[in-house]
Amino acid sequence: MARFCYSLILYLLSPLIVFYLYGIRGKKNPAYRHHFAERFGLVATQGISPLLIHCASVGEVLAATPLIKQLQLKHPNLAITVTCNTPTGREQIINNFKNSVQALYLPLDFPLATARFLKRIKPQALCILETELWPNLMAQCHNRNIPVLVLNARLSAKSQQGYNKVKPLTNVIMSSITSLASHNQQDAQRFIELGLATEKVNVTGSIKFDIQPNTAQQDKVSRLKTQYNQQRFIWVAGSTHPIEHELILNVHQRLLKKVPDALLVIAPRHPEQFNNVADLLTDSALTFSRRSEDNYTTEQVLLADTLGELQCLYGMANVSYIGGSLIERGGHNPLEAAAFSVGALTGPHTYNFNHVYPELVALGGCKQVKNSDELYKQLCLYENEPELCKALGIQANKCLLHNQGAIARTISIINQYIKL
Image (cartoon, rainbow, N blue to C red; front, top):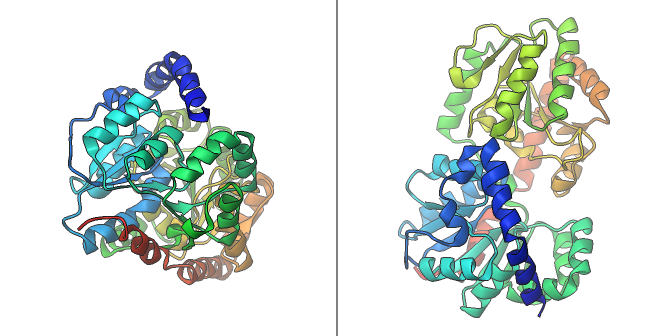
């Protein structure tokens, strides 16, 4: 009954959902209108029996990339389909894997759409990254004897409260999970309290720690340092959001008064914000160039308006600022910078990465600031005392290395449910 009511509400809201995706989001970013039939399970490929891996958007795709590449290395004949919800996620899948995986949109969670999708794809198993728990998709997989594996699972206390408010639907979700790989014991316990059987829960750690820059990335960082003058003080503000953009640009204007040759690399979280940030820069007194045009000389700001480069841009920095944290967006992943021994600065709002930040801060690989004034002061400190800045990066990398190994543990779980 719970799933019936949920589905009925979805169908009643379907005109608004379609209008939002195709009309509102599609107007801001026309890519939302491409492959729109896939949102209803109308995919061209049929019956390839792949391993189906769902990543909500860019962050999950980046986190899953080392896992998927390891699966491809260990099982070269395994067909893999990677789904997402956003155009940026889809583009990231294509950039990272080219034609070695099939990239699709996950259909909206309408019963007929998910049924059509599963009938055409015929997956061996469904792997869901983190907490993209769609009741109809999961229940239909369970009914078709398709294992549902929730990987890199996290569940905050706030999210747990939300699931408790819709307990009948939560019961459907929990009963549909075949196996769950959790970040830590605390997250695992929250799933158990929601009704997931204890024997289905594994504590594997977070796969986001399993980052290892390859030779091509290291070579690219060396080129970037040469191109953007490694003698300058460079800070990268990655995954920034509206309101936060303005705060970051203001901090850099203040920093330039003390450090006239400092360079800010600002990378908005969403591509539709690229031009908005360019407009902010045009209206300011700051000189800037676009990374996409690759014509940088000595400007004060580099607008990172490309996809798939953020980790390497972090790599050329003295220090990073991780966006979504000066405003209440919950923060983003600091480990891409840590992989290149670049320390992180973050605002107070980091609840999306509660499995990362406490240890990273405790080990001295990240400095948390309360506001933009404190961010400015920390930048001044690290510019003035480069050894402190270097130590921040070294400790960040130590934290990363100390927590690695989740990918191997996760693959051992997946191997139990795929036919090779």
